[in-house]
Image 1 (tube, one colour):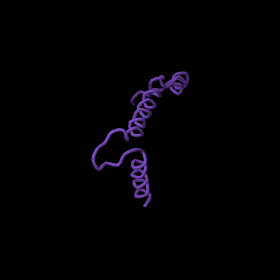
Image 2 (image 1 turned 30 degrees about the vertical axis):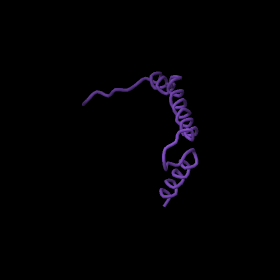
Image 3 (image 1 turned 90 degrees about the vertical axis):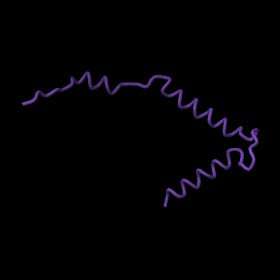
Image 4 (image 1 turned 120 degrees about the vertical axis):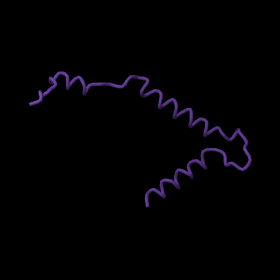
Length: 70
């Protein structure tokens, strides 16, 4: 028979109490804010025939959500 490996209750409790480091929360927040700022302030850039600002992005996202709900 193969040996049975069991963890002690203290080892299981310690594993459950694992916490995220501060940067694991900060990096996604910072990147989201940076991308949102780029999209929101893209009206300064001028490309021919490309809709500017946050409204077109929200319209595209709404279309994707509506098509996924079917």
